Each structure stands twice: as C-alpha cells, then as structure tokens.
Amino acid sequence: MANMTYKDAVNVAITALGDTNPEAVEKLNAMLVQLNKRGSGGGMTKTQRENEVLKGMILEILQEADAFIAPTEIKEHEGLEHLTVPKIGALMKQLIDAGQAQKHLHKKHILYARAGIEFIDPDAPAEDEATEDEAE
Image (tube, rainbow, N blue to C red; front, side, top):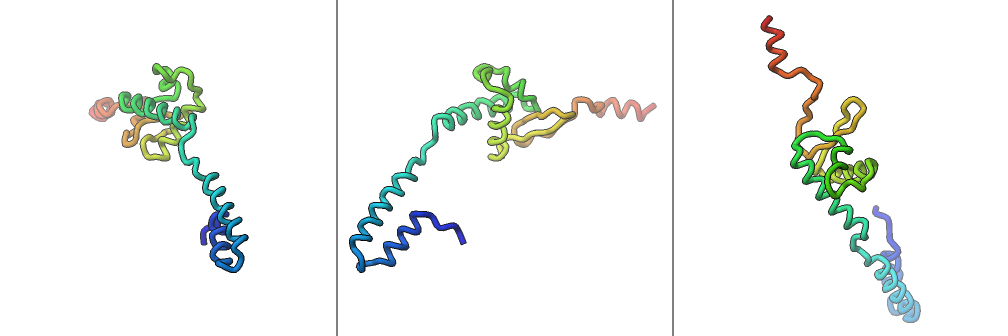
C-alpha cells in the first residue's frame, strides 16, 4: 500500500465526519486548501532551468564528437568554461539516467558519449595491423 499523504488523511477525515461536525469539516477544508497551496509550486527552479540549457549544450557537443570524450574536453567548449568537472559529471548522470548519454571507464578515466556510440579503445591495435602480423 502506498504511503498516505496529509491531503489523503484530511480527505478521509472530512468524509468520515460528514455532516456530524460542520465546524470541524470547515476547518479541515481550510487545512486542505493550505496543503494544496503548499504543493502547487510544481515549476522548475532557476537552477533546474539553467541545467536544462547546459544539458542541451552538452548533448550537442557529444553529438558533434560522435565518440567518447573526457569531461575536460566538454569544459573547453564555449559557454561551458565556467563548469567544474564534478558539475559536468552531475549533468551527465542526469543525461545517462534519461537514456541520452553513456559513460565508460577507460584506464581510470571516465569518458562520455551520446547514447548508442560503441567504445573503441584507442590503445588497441587496429584490425589492419593484426592481420599483417598474422600474415607473417
């Protein structure tokens, strides 16, 4: 069973009292109005709106790169210079949770890319080199 909210509890009390105690029902209705006001903020905060813009910029960078890149490379782009690496990591976590990006740990370094990109190890020998060694 889901947790009962204060609003649910007040509604149950109003229903239970019915017409037996009109003064109490009136007070509970006033309380319900206050509870509805408290929870009606619903909009995004200033920081959340700013973060949405930053995440859009980061996604554009990842789209252009079309490969895994380090947070420091993201930070070098115009408009993102003021971001710290931990802030970039926090924004990237939100993008990863939304399925728009992915991360990869390579030799103790975290790299990010847009979703759907396959990681190619830059240190691995190219397939052409491997076939040449086998031919000898």
